[in-house]
Image 1 (tube, one colour):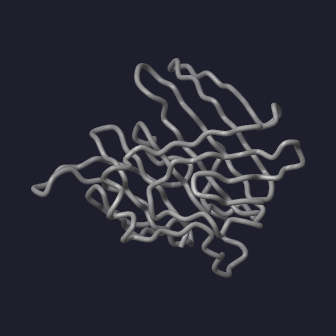
Image 2 (tube, rainbow, N blue to C red):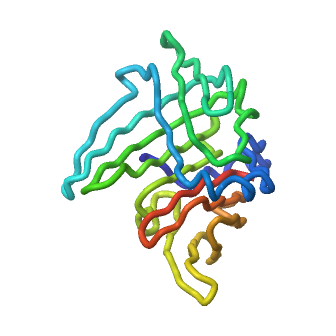
Image 3 (cartoon, rainbow, N blue to C red):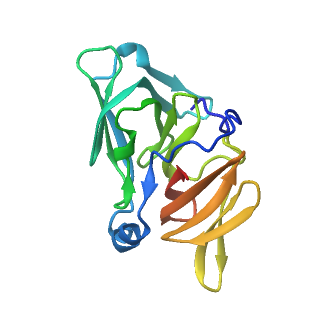
Length: 207
């Protein structure tokens, strides 16, 4: 996925267009550990299939347009094609995207298949200035120091398994759980929904 740390300009704090209601997240997330995204009506020009030397297969979709409807479980995007593009998603309860309605967004989705098992899915939503609003990940642990400038590790302590995340500083959280972190010059909340030895599901939202 072609991504980069959020741009440092303009300097004013961008609007929070994806939010987390922690009480609802905490109540339901144990039963909702799997995250998922898929696209309907994507124009052919927005879709790409890639293979890598390790034998992995990646399906990539990039959609740019205005959110005309933000419903529970879907975003409807007007991008000049007919019919509108529909982004269907399965996110933990408590993550709200209704504020995206009316905004111009850039959405990238990747499904990567490597070896046996289900795909690793990444979804990024950015605003019209290219600033990250939301990153959802489900599957294999992200690569070290990925394009967003983050490193993820599973650790063990007397309380059990934890996820360690290094951004501007090192933070650690149990699963399920939430933690605040800084990426570039911006503040984010990371909501951890599932954690295994090399498998993780989380959503990172701009605050």
